[in-house]
Length: 387
Image (cartoon, rainbow, N blue to C red; front, side, top):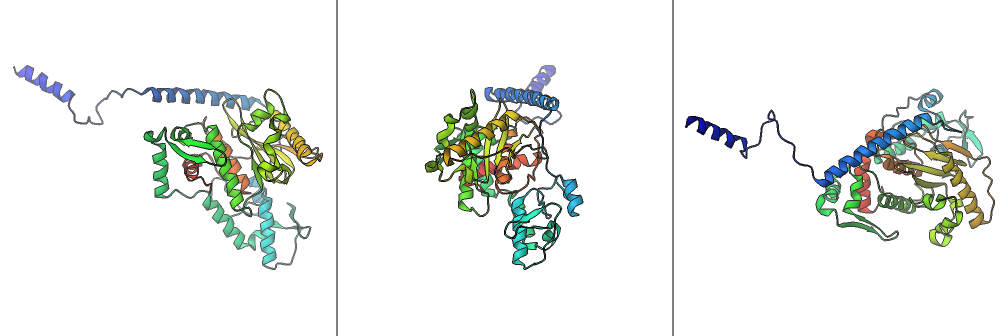
């Protein structure tokens, strides 16, 4: 009797409703079908990422043009540049023409009449002379403050109500709900579409294209703050090059009646590129007369820049009746840029390359900033306004 009572008591304890202690071994709950699919998708993504890394290590880029690095900038200017910090009190003016022009304008406002010769050849367009950048940095506290404010603006944490809005949009109950509708482009974002901005997910076409539309609207609101840019959507390059190069397939995409401007009037033109499982970026940099290719895995593909260069020549000839000579333009495969450390953040890296370049800023971010950029991008999409 006593033995039976003890056995029954132990059985009751085993199936008791009380939570088990941390030392007890518990059986993991059964995963849902959605979780299983997500797990296998991430495994496939890791294997593809590893194969891309191996391929890029064995591929030798051609005609690589690398800009000045932080060490060279430190030796040139006498300042210590720390690329690991997103907010900089020291301004890097090496690869930012807009910063040099603004610095020259500040010097002119402060009535600094003396001109200097510069080893980095910072041109003042109005006077046609070269200015030394080091005294410009030291004598322009307003520019320094403005640049620091811009840098902080790029990394401001979300407010409580914004964070709550993003979490609500990511919730399961809103998966089939239409969260936002962009009238100009007709892009509709449902809860399941926005899920790609959650951690460890690949960005989709709708989210990328809508964000590019918001960047263009941001430029229109404040044209003095941003470069004049054109943002092609993710389907442009596919239409242009598949199965082979065909300008007529995209000829009507850039009508003046549709855009309100011609591409030759733009400072920078961004072309998102989607490979098999990877996002990269091609840039037509008319300000610096070069074609640029940015890959967050540090790869290179000469066929992409060749197609983009040919398109730009055909576009100018068709819309403006001019034959533009690009024989002196550079082909730059940018190597000094932030790189991804996983197999799913390539789309977000591409968007931030575009965001920072359209502001005239250097690429001062890293892999550690990606979780924040995911939430921030979701917030901007839900508000239909890019900051």
